[in-house]
Each structure stands twice: as structure tokens, then as C-alpha cells.
Image (cartoon, rainbow, N blue to C red):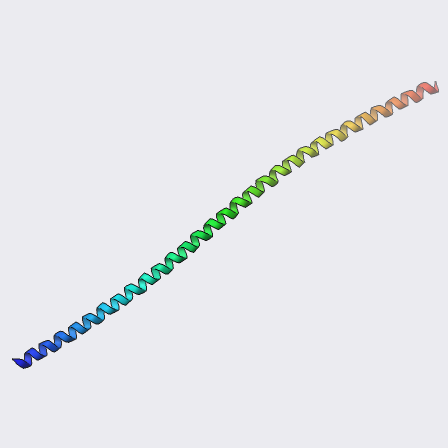
Length: 109
């Protein structure tokens, strides 16, 4: 009957409206998810850049430590050489003093 057809048509229209709303809601959720994924990707890229910058700083600090260690080794070697020279100088000075004493004793006798 016409009333039944009208009722069926109205029911189908309501179902279609509900389906359209569900599609719109799903589309909105997908769009929001896509935006969040884009934000996450952006944050991920920032984090990667931060990590690369930190790795570069670490390499630079390692190079500084290696250079300072090398300079320290050179200074330590120079210090040993200087101490050795001082010891040699003292030995020569002692020998010279001994020689002077011998000369003084020879003069006295």
C-alpha cells in the first residue's frame, strides 16, 4: 500500500542519513588520524635531527679529548726530558764541585 511504501521510503531515508553521518564521522576520524600521523612524523624527523646533532657534538667532544690526551702525552714526555736534563745538569755540577775541591786541595799542598 501507499502508506507502507511511504513508511519504507522514510525508513530508508533515515538509514541513508545515518549511513551518511557514519561515513562523515569515519572520514573525520581518518582525517584526524592522518593529521596526527603527520604530526608524529614531524616530531620523529625533529628527533632524528636532534640525534644527528648530538652525535656530531659527541664526535667533536671525542676529538677534543683525543687532542687533549695527545697534548698531555707530549707535555708528559717533555717533563720527563726536562727532569732528565736537570738530573744531568746536577750530576755535572757535582762533578765540577768535586773537581774544584781537588784543585783547591792541590793548591793548598
